[in-house]
Length: 469
Ligand code: AMP
Image 1 (cartoon, rainbow, N blue to C red):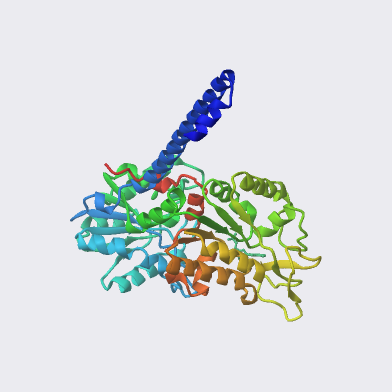
Image 2 (image 1 turned 90 degrees about the vertical axis):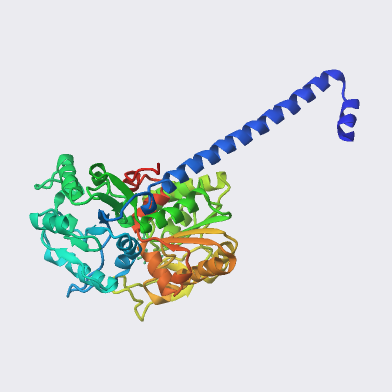
């Protein structure tokens, strides 16, 4: 109060009016700012609700019904058609077990590989039916050749509650990917195929997160021809972790991006600049950013046509007050055998003193000073999203940066309560290599889908699921 009195007694009356006016204007500005912040929050909340308000298994009746479940059984097979990694099959068990408990009759549909609309024996889902049967300890019927054949439809019609049927690879039909028999884009053919698939069930459950970024017959079209539609438990979990990280993060929010190319992740960086407090860039991507700032990068992998864009992203980060962290030292070499993923014995491997890379050498991993600097940021973050390795992690000598950062992320998750979300095939392999995969809050099962989610793109397979009533 004394402050106001002091001001009033020290100004003449003409100035008093100006003073009052400026105080009132400042108050109005503050109120406007608060209102626009509220709008922003509400808009963010709306987006979040968009993902989290989708029908889930709990919202639809499945008891005693024929339930079509889109799963992602695109598993790796060896030359003897033996499944070398069954994690995608395991990821669907919670939904299948729930449906069995509810006494539903389950019809599973999936793709495997890229048969390009033709029957390819090596891409049959038969090995998956055997693996699934082993995991569940009960028979899984499999109808070969054609997922919409008379045999498939008869098996679906005769399926009893508590039984499971797996249909053959959807992509043996070109219509699954929106093409006709001669390989032309054909929406009508896709819709007709979706309708045939839908005719086998009463309810549709989307549990193939790995394909929800595709607008295919079994992801987007099929929902039009089935009465009740919901996400399965796997898709629900993916949407919860990715959605909450992006729209309702506990701060500080850190994104770590690595991998080979800036061009693959431009849209991710652009979108994340509006959401995060800090971005760490590693992998070959970092050299394009460093070169854009005039730093010498030797023979490192650089996308010269993306230098302006890289500089623009750094400028935008500064403008938005996002910490944009690049490596401050590197592991470098003058020779790498990329084909056999090893370091030739005659190669010279060194650590740089700073961010500059000398002529004739390429950056292959982040250096010790960078690991230390990045780890400090990881330790203080409460939400961490990671996509892409920070070096050529497939070669042991160049995996230290990626592995150590994976360990710091795991530590922040288990000891400091941070939420960590890892996506992309290589980052998932890296957390496994570091032996910390069990300590990460969520490992996404869809590389492409999670990347498109981080880009802020709409995912057709998710948009197609109706909102809760
Ligand atoms: P991406 O698919 O874009 O996530 O890239 C993953 C690939 O980037 C992996 O195969 C890594 O070996 C590669 N990579 C990471 N760092 C580097 C680097 N410094 N130089 C060359 N390739 C790299």
